[in-house]
Image 1 (tube, rainbow, N blue to C red):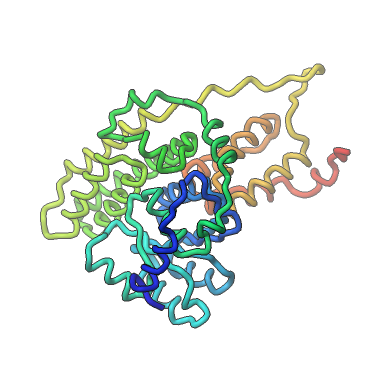
Image 2: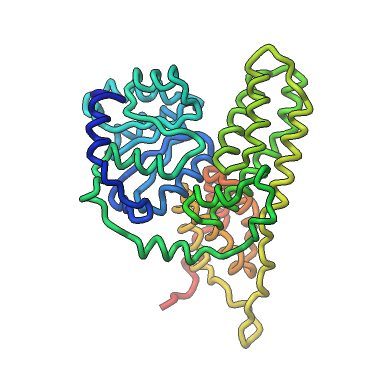
Length: 381
């Protein structure tokens, strides 16, 4: 199959009459997102979810290689630099499978040099989109390589408009220094979903600040590979959430670590300060409401059976890497205050978007509940 060649030009011409992005509906389309960085995953999902496709995530190229052999995907969005197996290697191996020869694979890369584009083409990729992700470019590219042509696209204006109206105005963006965090651009990039954006920012700053002490030690020990990997990941994630100043600092550190130049400890200090400043912009959550008290003085929370059902539902969300788990755990915590069950570890992992770790902690909680109390619980109906 031709990549970046005549086939691409033909498909581009099929889309000369572009339609407005907010009118696009990818319902029924299945997209495989191959990306190891959790923050970048959330940004990409936030962009795509407003157009209603089914999105599945692979954390590296090996997982993606396994998944495309197990089920059919309409298109694969492939990151380039990943642990275990990188995007180029995964694409070559996919192209070795005859039945997958025509499956569209699009590179997602911060490197748009001619040499990098040629590597994508030689590996068998059809196209590439740049990082940080541009909504128009991404959607146009997906339409170019799938059956979502003008005639096939279904309009969902009312649904998307409703989503925008449902977003609360939680912070005056004029109070934020755009050189530190261009929140307006970041929110637009993630489909106008301000709540999702600030959840991503919260997880982003917490996880990166937690790694600062280790990076300082790596720098002192001259562990250039570890410093370069951290800086590269930080640069890409910062660009995706529109933390432009931070992306520049991370890029400078990456350049130093990847060469024989001296790695400046002051850069790590500046990165930490920038992350801390971004944290100050995160809207404060409203204090939780007082628990509802029923007439007899008891707490109107879950019955044991209801509690178990809710936890099982949360488990499903975590196994599907569904961001709704963030809101879901908040509701569960609020309504289970009368239960002698500690879900703080589960909630902490969810808020850091560490869904696999959260699922394991939740499984441990479910085991402590046992079965007897659930079976003995009175029937609800």
